[in-house]
View 1 (cartoon, rainbow, N blue to C red):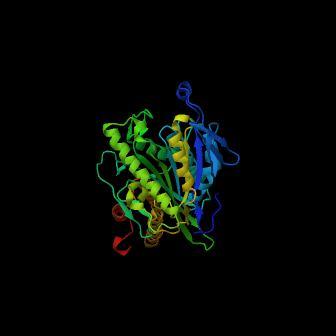
View 2: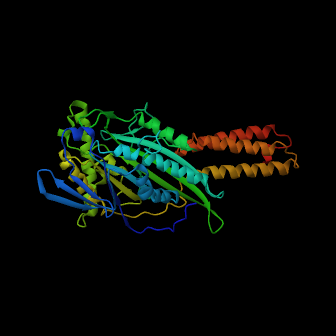
Length: 437
């Protein structure tokens, strides 16, 4: 069981880690040298300029991972505690940044069918559901998932690929943001939530460039919301809602290297504009003289508003390649990451939020219990079918959770449907006058 953290809104900096992939076979064949040298024990990177061996740049980060690092190394050392915080009601973000071909998607997703190669997203999913399975019986959980991409500055719902509806970003009363009408799937197992991600991946925008045969041409965000109802020290039920954003950014390389033309060129232009906006936000956040943070300059920065300078615990994974011909991109990524580590966030536990779906289900179950008790009282205890009816209705409620979205109108429809069904059964039960219930 995860130890409950004390409510806190103290500042903490964005955690930045760097991961360097090995030289590829093609890079070795082409005679490219290795210019990245890592001292993993102390988190230091030395970058050597291939045109001037005396010119070196040194960087220090929270943690660094070389070509020998495994997917499990990253997760256990960097991300496990972060996901524990989500289970306790904090917002958290993990985002991978870097040039195409440096291992961003490998780090975030990896290979689902190989336990040793599963990436951060799959390991987060396993962690969450394994924790739920081992949790105390006084804890109730509800997990839902959404998946979107930002393609040419338009937000696409990857779980509703047939819809051409343009989604809009809206402000929450607490200052955070959300995407209006974005699909939210309720999931009850590792298999169900993995299926959501696999379906979404099938609809992502990819295309061939000089940098990668299957280059991501969009920014993708997989969002997991974990609602938990616990009995507090006061004997009352308290709800926390943790949100985990898992972000795979498109490549940050120069357009001249991609060989992009036509549609690929348009995509690259939009990608670079949004990444430039992200850089401007990071710069403004760490510049004490900056009075304005330009979150509204792109859809990406709007969606990451909480993650950068707001209510979130955030980890940036900067992915780099070691080859000499990528020196400019590598030093750009490291400078970007070096600046990001100075961003200060203000994470806090999201307690008893008004939009918690789990509260809706608890209220419906309590209403069923009350009707059951009243039915027993009015029928003089002759309610052989009442308990089985209640059990069936509760089971139906749990099954209906799959279909309910975070949408007030849909919740209202489900309530009305439930009431009609209850009324129908009441009319068939002997000894019960519905008008007196």
